[in-house]
Length: 127
Image 1 (spheres, rainbow, N blue to C red):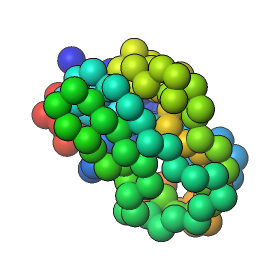
Image 2: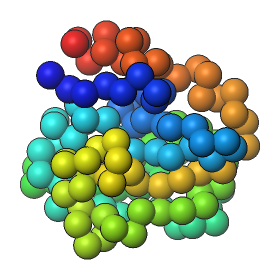
Image 3: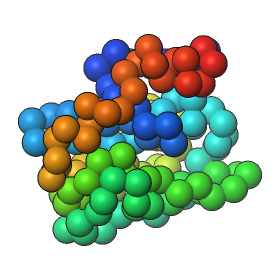
Image 4: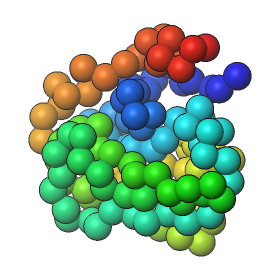
Protein backbone atom coordinates (compact mmCIF):
# COMPACT_ATOMS: atom_id res chain seq x y z
CA UNK A 1 0.00 0.00 0.00
CA UNK A 2 1.37 3.39 -1.03
CA UNK A 3 2.18 6.19 1.37
CA UNK A 4 0.03 9.29 0.86
CA UNK A 5 1.05 12.24 3.08
CA UNK A 6 -1.83 14.47 4.17
CA UNK A 7 0.11 17.71 3.62
CA UNK A 8 0.41 17.25 -0.15
CA UNK A 9 -1.83 17.86 -3.17
CA UNK A 10 -1.90 15.37 -6.05
CA UNK A 11 -2.48 15.51 -9.81
CA UNK A 12 -4.32 12.76 -11.69
CA UNK A 13 -1.00 12.13 -13.48
CA UNK A 14 0.56 11.23 -10.05
CA UNK A 15 2.70 14.31 -9.41
CA UNK A 16 2.51 15.81 -5.93
CA UNK A 17 3.06 19.36 -4.72
CA UNK A 18 4.03 20.69 -1.31
CA UNK A 19 3.28 24.41 -1.05
CA UNK A 20 5.98 26.42 0.73
CA UNK A 21 4.90 30.06 0.58
CA UNK A 22 4.78 31.06 -3.10
CA UNK A 23 6.84 28.04 -4.20
CA UNK A 24 5.67 24.46 -4.82
CA UNK A 25 7.99 21.49 -4.46
CA UNK A 26 7.07 18.85 -7.07
CA UNK A 27 7.74 15.12 -7.22
CA UNK A 28 6.04 11.87 -8.14
CA UNK A 29 3.90 9.87 -5.74
CA UNK A 30 4.92 6.70 -3.96
CA UNK A 31 2.30 4.89 -6.05
CA UNK A 32 3.84 6.20 -9.29
CA UNK A 33 7.38 5.21 -8.33
CA UNK A 34 6.12 1.71 -7.42
CA UNK A 35 4.53 1.41 -10.87
CA UNK A 36 7.70 2.66 -12.61
CA UNK A 37 9.98 0.30 -10.63
CA UNK A 38 13.70 1.10 -10.59
CA UNK A 39 14.39 4.68 -11.69
CA UNK A 40 17.70 4.80 -13.58
CA UNK A 41 17.78 8.35 -15.02
CA UNK A 42 16.05 11.71 -14.52
CA UNK A 43 16.06 14.53 -17.05
CA UNK A 44 15.55 17.62 -14.90
CA UNK A 45 13.78 20.77 -16.07
CA UNK A 46 15.77 23.91 -16.83
CA UNK A 47 15.84 26.46 -14.00
CA UNK A 48 14.33 29.75 -15.19
CA UNK A 49 11.89 28.06 -17.56
CA UNK A 50 8.28 29.26 -17.36
CA UNK A 51 5.72 26.48 -17.65
CA UNK A 52 1.95 26.13 -17.75
CA UNK A 53 -0.03 23.62 -15.70
CA UNK A 54 -0.20 20.34 -17.59
CA UNK A 55 3.02 20.94 -19.55
CA UNK A 56 5.66 18.17 -19.65
CA UNK A 57 8.73 19.46 -17.82
CA UNK A 58 10.92 16.47 -16.95
CA UNK A 59 11.47 12.83 -17.84
CA UNK A 60 11.94 9.89 -15.48
CA UNK A 61 13.41 6.75 -16.99
CA UNK A 62 13.08 3.38 -15.34
CA UNK A 63 14.08 -0.11 -16.35
CA UNK A 64 10.75 -0.55 -18.19
CA UNK A 65 10.12 2.81 -19.89
CA UNK A 66 10.44 6.58 -19.81
CA UNK A 67 7.67 8.73 -18.34
CA UNK A 68 7.02 12.43 -18.79
CA UNK A 69 6.58 14.44 -15.61
CA UNK A 70 3.96 17.16 -15.96
CA UNK A 71 3.80 20.39 -14.04
CA UNK A 72 0.60 20.39 -11.98
CA UNK A 73 0.83 24.17 -11.56
CA UNK A 74 1.97 27.17 -13.64
CA UNK A 75 5.00 29.29 -12.88
CA UNK A 76 8.77 29.61 -13.15
CA UNK A 77 11.05 26.72 -12.28
CA UNK A 78 13.38 28.04 -9.58
CA UNK A 79 15.27 24.88 -8.58
CA UNK A 80 15.94 21.35 -9.82
CA UNK A 81 17.08 18.50 -7.60
CA UNK A 82 20.66 17.94 -8.76
CA UNK A 83 21.02 15.03 -6.33
CA UNK A 84 18.88 12.97 -8.74
CA UNK A 85 21.60 13.21 -11.41
CA UNK A 86 23.94 11.18 -9.21
CA UNK A 87 21.28 9.03 -7.55
CA UNK A 88 18.01 8.82 -9.50
CA UNK A 89 16.87 6.00 -7.20
CA UNK A 90 16.03 8.66 -4.58
CA UNK A 91 12.67 8.83 -6.38
CA UNK A 92 12.14 5.19 -5.37
CA UNK A 93 13.53 5.35 -1.86
CA UNK A 94 12.34 8.84 -0.81
CA UNK A 95 9.53 9.93 -3.15
CA UNK A 96 8.32 12.65 -0.74
CA UNK A 97 11.69 13.79 0.63
CA UNK A 98 15.05 13.49 -1.15
CA UNK A 99 13.35 12.36 -4.38
CA UNK A 100 11.63 15.69 -5.16
CA UNK A 101 12.22 16.75 -8.77
CA UNK A 102 11.89 20.53 -8.99
CA UNK A 103 10.57 23.68 -7.33
CA UNK A 104 8.32 26.16 -9.08
CA UNK A 105 7.40 29.73 -8.14
CA UNK A 106 3.63 29.79 -8.45
CA UNK A 107 2.09 32.23 -10.91
CA UNK A 108 -1.45 31.27 -9.79
CA UNK A 109 -1.53 29.68 -6.31
CA UNK A 110 -5.23 28.83 -6.72
CA UNK A 111 -4.29 26.12 -9.24
CA UNK A 112 -3.13 23.95 -6.34
CA UNK A 113 -6.59 24.24 -4.78
CA UNK A 114 -8.03 22.27 -7.70
CA UNK A 115 -5.68 19.33 -7.05
CA UNK A 116 -6.67 16.22 -5.07
CA UNK A 117 -6.04 15.98 -1.36
CA UNK A 118 -4.62 12.75 0.12
CA UNK A 119 -8.05 11.18 0.57
CA UNK A 120 -9.17 11.91 -2.99
CA UNK A 121 -5.84 10.64 -4.35
CA UNK A 122 -6.20 7.41 -2.37
CA UNK A 123 -9.54 6.91 -4.09
CA UNK A 124 -7.99 7.77 -7.47
CA UNK A 125 -5.42 4.95 -7.13
CA UNK A 126 -7.94 2.51 -5.65
CA UNK A 127 -6.50 2.46 -2.17
